Amino acid sequence: MARRTTMMQPMINGGGSGTGRRVLTVVVVLVLVALVLRDPIGAAHTVQLLAEWAGDALDALGKFGSALSRTS
Image (tube, rainbow, N blue to C red; front, side):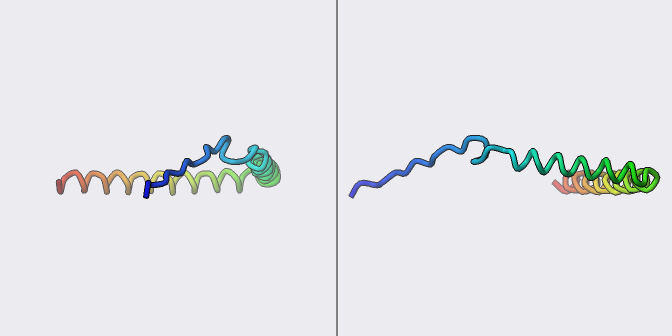
């Protein structure tokens, strides 16, 4: 018997129109703006903590990569 090949249909725009993603983005931006307007000092403190955490994560990844390159 001959082997049967199947063709996958290409997904255009991720399979949807993308309006859900746009709506979610707008809602997130509006919530962030509302939080900043309600408590700017708290929002600034939160951003500082997130930036510090991101910096620590990048440092850890750099140390990990450096340790991997030394063992090879």
